[in-house]
Length: 167
Image 1 (tube, one colour):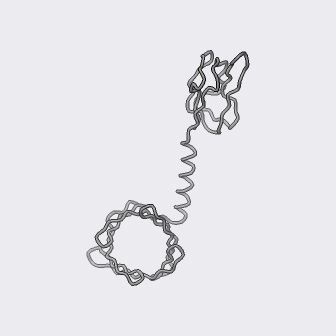
Image 2: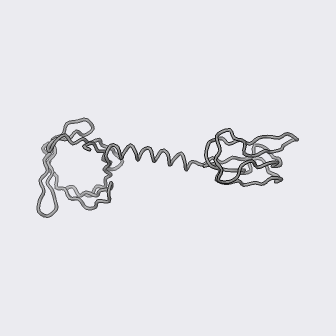
Image 3: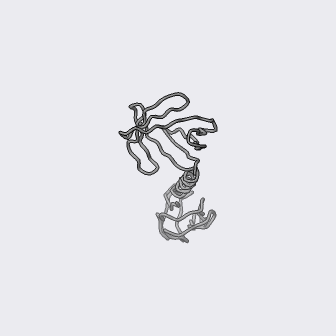
């Protein structure tokens, strides 16, 4: 794999290694030369600019690099790793998003139809609330897992009382 996404200071750069002396950086052709010195330091020449470079720390994707005496923290991933990371971040954000459902009016809980840990689809009936002699279905506003039920059958609830949450 010759395609990488390198992130330094929240700036992402797409880098493709063309050969031993040419890179594409964000689609721009860039010439470079790398010479390794005996002390673990390298001399990097990029478009006629010279940098003294040494790797300070490497924790897999996270790399700490010393360039001309200044330390830079970077994350280097293949294009596939970057796509996978983005997908996982989005999935995690969706999963950890919590939807809290409150009583729309004061009343009495007639029935709790779901329990904590159960999967629900958007629109599923979770609680039956009696108010003014009418039965009102309290439905799941999103699909997910019931993380908490904060009421019980026969309980009186006030308007805006926390009933249940979904993650």
